[in-house]
Image (cartoon, rainbow over all chains, first blue to last red; front, side, top):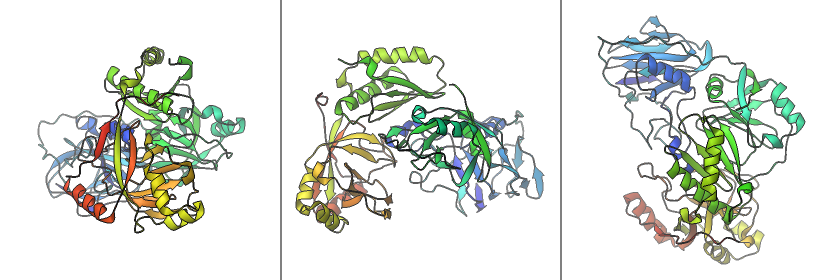
Length: 281
Length: 247
């Protein structure tokens, strides 16, 4: 078991989500930066869809009552096993009774901890991803105990892997969305030239960007959307839907983030700036 | 006869595409949307489809390598489409219009100048088509509201609308499947549990199905609530035997 002594800002268990229920309005959920999460799993030779712990900005304090192998990938923050500072991208053996805590965030926004064999929390609709209104809790709570396989220390062979998700991306690659053609020339120019900032309205559901671009009066029927779809609200705000985002929307879908860019944006936080780079799909 | 020119294909992301019809609320379009969506799921293994109003989102398990080839296959599938592919079902949804739940009944009656009893009649008469499911898990976008019930949204939305609330706004009507903020005028409450995570599927309706509202008393409401909690309530539904009439 792993006991949650402190939760951190927003810590949850995530796998690759439940995309199969999109047509019933159920959010995809799942790890925000799937590349870092998969890297952490790969380090332990886990299946890539094994559930991992996603930490946001500040880490939790975790006490292991049973031993296991863990591996970290994603945002940079010091990792301490008891007092000993431990590296990312390397399997770490944690003994029963040891505590993991985290220092101050240095770069990026979300850090992933994989554990040998994944966490053993109960799946809901085919996924262990915590999500508001779907799972009993949407983040870890103080005192919670998380089950995992008890690890074996010897004979473990691990691969070393480097992460590829940029933690401070200045370019977010996007494709033209279905309603891109409805934009005015000045709106199109703004999207390509403007430096955008992640506003304080950013979470697992959506990232709102500032500044806004020109307003519009495009009115349309409800249409399907995906994580990475960028909606333009009538007041000119660009809103990037993320993993916990809704499945349909009534606003024009002006852009679509590339799969890698969803991961990159997940590592940006309030105040970080970037440019969109339009690419052809 | 279906017109191929009517639909277009849009590559949305590395592994998804949209099939789009002219953006309009039409039973005819929706029957093509749901039939094609059903046929795609049979043809391509592991593919997910979300039909909504006038488009289908198709998500493939991996990156689309041959977009032109897939488009051709989809066009062929569309040309040979049998509108009977998806017939759907009709579901009766119990709603209690008692003043305990119908928070906006006085306002709605006053502004529409219609007695609330007549409003209930007008609301329970139509068969509503489900054009989309989204916004919240199990939230149905319904078409077919009586024109006389057209009303503006609330001036300021409620911070919290009770789970099961039945509302009207503009030409829309719908049910809040869970507690949520909301700006619709609330005229009743449905005792059903909309979203059952332990059941497959977790929600009883699909896009293309129809529903109607059935007025129930407060006592019936309480009983259904208990039956739902015990898992013994039998939802009244029947399959459609033919596709909607094309106009």
